[in-house]
Length: 422
Image (cartoon, rainbow, N blue to C red; front, side, top):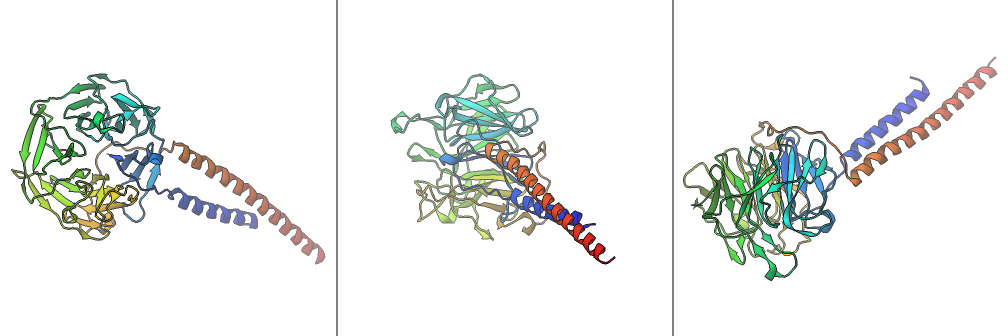
């Protein structure tokens, strides 16, 4: 390798190292009241109550072989067409790779009287507003939606108010079903429906039952042992009563279903506070009646008490993200937001820093969902993608001219030395 080739090779090596470090440099700031949805190895997060993040569309790479809390891999995508907060997102579509956002805001960020659905194609990284027919539900906030494996999304509860006046608030106890295959809305059964509520969790069991846990009814509380269920097989309501440990009422918590049939809840509170000894609990749905168990906080990298956060299950691991942290035994400080993620091994209820450091080292395969390609499409990421090649070209040109100048000079010096020796 001559001098010029060696010079260029060194510059290329430096540039490749620089771009590799820069590509993984994105770290999202803390947020709360976002919504999350898992597709393949990507955990998507949409919106926030924080104004600057209300159109954010970001995802976390949750590949189990590399997932860790120290250096998580974050990416930003094309923004949501409208602001998104206090709402819900679910996966659907014929290939189960489209995420549907059930929103109360238009693209001009005005309140809509009816629910607006925005669809994100995770394959193409594009947004659309599908034309949906049928019984379109009134728009709402602070509700929960959950999807089954047949392309249907079940939306229950929530509240509608278009201004700050509490007197204009309406709380719902109706349930609507969005068929994402046929793009139609239908209203589910209201017979024996529970009382209107907000800020609860919705978890679909493998037997087709949706469990609605916690939340609030206006200024009232809901007992954690009294759990309304909606049977998606025959569209009927029922109420079950769980036994076991007595859990304090709570709202704005999260719930996931572990592979062994336990609903794991985390965080939340009531009247802006919480019982620190009951942050983590599980409901065993494999026994009859269902049974609550309060779990101790053990392991490394324990999360703080959280409210308005997200939790999702990937294999045997529950992922906590974002939310408002408790300060002075209160969640009232909405600037005290969490920007970290936390991992719970649901096989032994131990908090870990990575999936590889878990005492149970074997990992199940990630959920079988259509895999997708990385696409960077929003203004920030597009600017970065455009800027990096331009900078690289400029650096290469400068390096090339510099290297060529040194090469010519060295060659001339060699000629002079050779001429002087004759």
